[in-house]
Length: 180
Image (cartoon, rainbow, N blue to C red; front, side, top):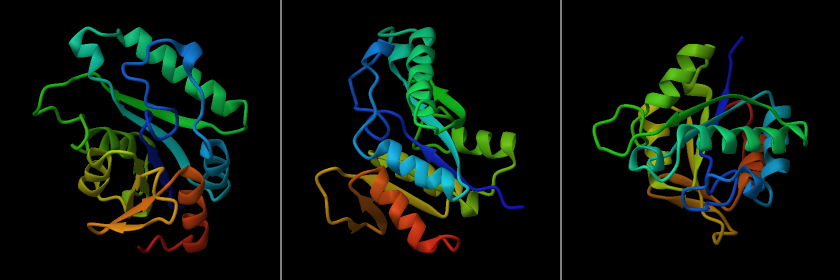
């Protein structure tokens, strides 16, 4: 059985990007996130969080702060019946790190740990580094979220959509082929 994944950036994709967020009480889902992730889950995609958190290396927050926020994200999603299968965090900020996006390390690690078929999986994030990580890992599709782009489309050969619900509806139309 093919195991497909949606790899999700955290800040600016699932929750608002609140610079160096360390207070789990401030975690809220972005509009369309719960609905979109529910559709993806219903389509049989396993959901994974992959997040760069350079604030740890820079001393702005601790690994425990990041874990508390990630736990709060998981809790908010679970309240909606949505379950993150696993999470990977890159706490580094220096270049040359194999796990920091745009490098594919976190995605490759999750694929190996969970037996995922990367060529049938999707990477979604709001930054070009997210898209590049998906491409480098061999994901079938990399999507950049651009909330101001309500029409959606392609930019430099990359699918650009406004939110996770739009991504889910795009996947629903094309499932199971995942051909861009």
